[in-house]
Amino acid sequence: DRPGLEHPHRVEEIQGFYLTTLRMYIMNQLSASPRCAVVYGKILSILSELRTLGMQNSNMCISLKLKNRKLPPFLEEI
Image (cartoon, rainbow, N blue to C red; front, side):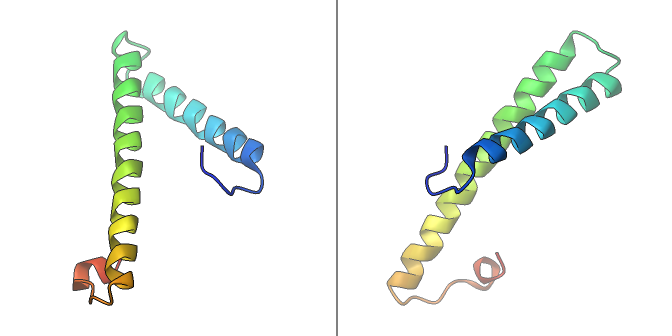
């Protein structure tokens, strides 16, 4: 889902590995309770939101740089 990737299928494989690992970790920590699916879904939702926020931040930083504006110190560190 990201344009310009050289090996998108490889990225999907790696993401799948991490998703499976996360799901197994949650199942292990919650002793396979019915809440596992809910917790897993919430974490995936949060990860998606973080990715969106990261993209918005990157776009804002690029926009500020194009306008020759100085970035605030906390944004320069990112």
